[in-house]
Image 1 (cartoon, rainbow, N blue to C red):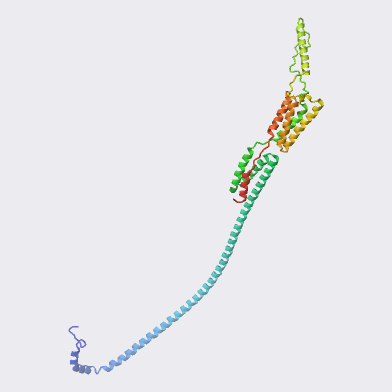
Image 2: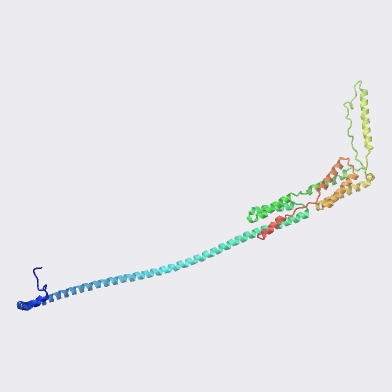
Length: 375
């Protein structure tokens, strides 16, 4: 405290000034008690050392036990870690094996996928080649058919083979329905319309007409040998023909009978004598034995014209038909109905027997060539 000033609190000068009497007093006071205090300190120090030793030993034992437990725990954990490491190693090995198997499977799948893609591309190429080859075959067939039809039309002089070939080609291409063949179809349609527009010569009907004319030649009357005509109008028999007249009617009945007999006699006389105007006198000079040669010559002319029509030689056929028409008009009786019909028949055949110019399907052939070239 403030009031209690100890020796330690005093300054050193003060202490040094008063030190001789204080040291003397302290040494005198403490001299008898110094020996017992020193003995107790040694025992206390020994006790403290023992306690410390016991504590140290205890702590050492506890530390050793703890270290052993830690060592055991470490050994256990190390064993567990080794087991887990072994298990992890086994699992890693299995995973590696699974990965290798999966990798091999993936490689196999990739190889199969690549093979499938290759096969698909090859199949598509094959299909395209087949489709292309089929189209090319169809185009080649159509081209050959059209060219053969053109030759047939040129030989026969008829447009029917070409019309049939173009129509069949158009139907065949329509069934295929290929866009790249649309140009060929349009060309076929235009050529078909152009060929159909040409008037066709019906040779069958013409040959039938010529056969009919040949058949009637033997029945036609010549100018030098006119046919005998029956009476144009014969007076009708009265109701009293063959019946006895009544009383008072003899005179009219006799007049009527004489008139009928006179009319019949006049008709017979007119049939014996005929006055005809002859423009060409040589027609009257044909003897009866020459009439047969004339008719046969006319038949030969008509048959030659028929053969010329069948062989498509229209110029020769028209020349023969004109000669036959001239013979009919010169040597046969044109006033007879059968002669007039025969002359008209021959004139019709002459007018219809003309050369037919069949148009060539050049547009179709050009379109087929372009399609075959791939343009």
